[in-house]
Image (cartoon, rainbow, N blue to C red; front, side, top):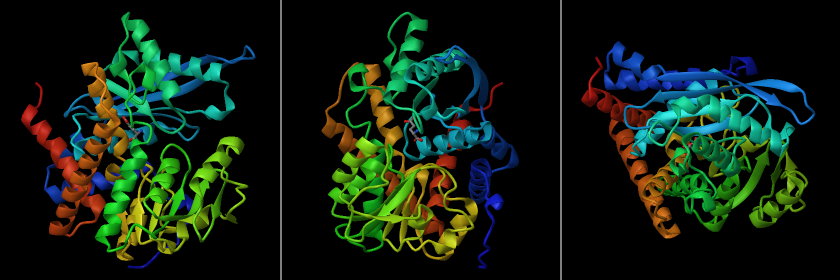
Amino acid sequence: MTLVDHATDSRTSALEDAHAQLAEAVAGLGYDEGTHAMLSKSRRELTVSIPLRRDDGSIEVLTGYRVQHNISRGPAKGGLRYSPAVTLDEVRALAMWMTWKCALLDVPYGGAKGGVAFDPRQYSTAELERITRRYTSEILPIIGPQQDIPAPDIGTDERTMAWIMDTYSVSQGHTVPGVVTGKPLSLGGSLGRASATSRGVVHIAKAALKSRGIAVSGATAAVQGFGKVGRDGARFLADEGALVVAISDQYGAIHSASGIDIAALSAHVDVTGSVVGFGDADVLGADDLLELDVDVLVPAAVEGVIHAGNAGKVRARIIVEGANGPTSRDADAILASNGVLVAPDILANAGGVIVSYFEWVQANQSYRWEARDVEARLEERMLAAWASVNELARTHDLTLRAAATRLAVSRVTEAHRLRGLYP
Ligand code: GLU
């Protein structure tokens, strides 16, 4: 195929990518247009205004969203994102991917996502608390442990989840730990939840390396992002004996051919807030990280970073998607024709929602599981999904993303079929 060097403005949006992936799955499964329409539309979308009194007394009005894409397999489930890039269309795409992720990993949820369009780094802790509580009270009618269960995503954390749980609980008159996941341990969070996405990414990275006949020990890796997913992902990869040769964050990238000392880098980031300036490594252009000659590339930041304009320059053997939607549709085709194995987001980063499910089960049972139970069950589910996706890809000559999406879409459609259409 011909490689087109697209300009930045020719990049596809997350929603266009999500719709194209669904259309391909629907065509492959031979579903009719009506079924396609049901799967492509969000079940519910709520846009809310969040008036905020700033610390200086001025008033600002932020916009927030909660989208429930599908609830046929269970309550809606998905993270809450605080970022200036949040739009309704982005939240729609992320909610749809959550539906497929939950179905693929066979956790009994539908898919949802929430977002508030602002930069949390520009706001005080007190302001963040007011934003979170007001957003929660605005979406209160559609969330709940049996309706829709938020969790952390970009720009939110366990403290945010504690505020949501408290606001929801106050409205109910009693404590409802099952309304969110990713809570602090002391409020009913699960052991192993904080690092679950990263653990899952590394389970998939190891399985992918094995499938390509590359030993984990000594394999080279580059990690884009040093946040909730990338940081522990880099650590676990290094623990497995891989050489993490490059790491980036939103401020820049660093490189060391002999491998970066992740513990030392973490200590540096705790003090300075960025990987930039880490003594034991060279400076690297942030985009150059994506083009390094490594065994595994882990994009663990935001959507659309690998696109038609740079996919042809990717030299990694394997991409393991820690972020949601890091590879565009156009890029997917180029990577496939260049023989790059892409472990798709809905499989590779599903560790977070798997342990969210475990946390919700523990909340509903009021019973805490041991860390070893959480970790063993997480690994079991990740590897079972890896095996089913690979089997479908092999027997139908599909990319792993096409196979994963097809499998997930067929499970959601089966739930629709069994439930029937009301009225
Ligand atoms: N935000 C995470 C994701 O995109 C976790 C969602 C959850 O645990 O509900 O998968």
